[in-house]
View 1: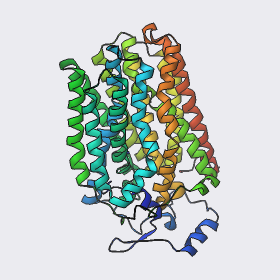
View 2 (view 1 turned 120 degrees about the vertical axis):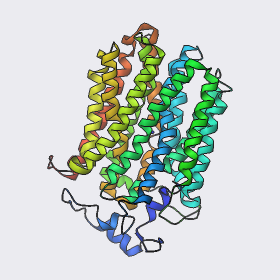
View 3 (view 1 turned 90 degrees about the vertical axis):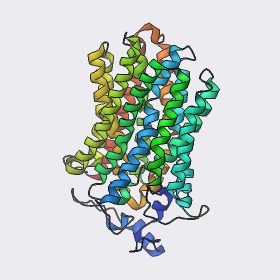
View 4 (view 1 turned 30 degrees about the vertical axis):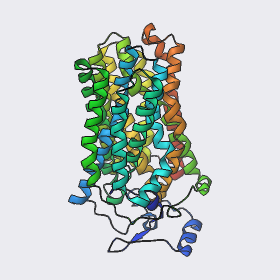
Length: 464
């Protein structure tokens, strides 16, 4: 489920202060000890993160350079993460061509997303050593080649898994990590909205690529559609990668960044967020992967199916920005994340089972997409509010590593439940098991986030 100039994940975990010339000074042993022993102080609702938790002594918070980074990161999310969100269009086309079942093809899409989790720490160390620009350019090459090579094996599941699953997934993960946390290095007061704009690129990209892929499939073969999408991604990623600008110094590949820190598991907030967000990852890709297939099961055309997926992705983009604005101005990141997850699960339980015609299905896609989009954009803000930006990259990459099961197995489990219900040929009723599975896990994840919220403060109306 996000810089050559973007955030250097491992380096970020080490940075504590920055001099005028941009050099990063490592924290002293004594200051580290004091930080570890100091009790956690409850902060006022509008307080900034404690100074010792921040990676830099000052932040631009505006200006051409800062907003250029946001635009570049938006572009990377648009074409790579957006590509993952548009997989449902290709999955529907492949199922219609009798290449494989939905549960089997869901593994291809889930493998794309899984690469983020599997490669979180290795890629962050590469970014720290070689700079995000080089890593993003390498990701651009992999992400572009994936669908182009997939065009030569459209009837081979192993071929699709290697090209669209692993190769594109590796490229997507490289670009994601080069862009995911960069706004936190340039923004403090406007951190959530800057992050929300970047993450909205996934929703906008998913919408645009879904519409483009659907239109191309009406005019050309599946193979040429794969090739066209690969070229479009490359054309967007290449200039975006070149303008990224890092704020931290590079670190040696060996011994230059933090290694896996088991000490994090002593923090109950970390454990609850790790488990909660990991659970949330199981259902998060179920709607975008299965909406096109579900749409055709209720008699809608493939064009309508791709448009519904586009609506989901556009709503996701709006949710990423809207929840970012709301978190900055009114609610805070933790409160907003709880609302996102709970509303997401509620929409699946209440709206999806009733969506047996165009209008209610569109309504569900918009509401669910809006909530799902906010979930991803708020997680970095939640982690920053608790652990500070100096620890953000390290904590984020560690948590992402544990998202592997949700990324890889979430959509295929829904596919198996769909098959157990009789398959999509049996109509929308066959999807009820998959729907209940997705809704229940979203609600469970929201409960764990609520526990973190209560630990932070029992004043439930407080901005956190």
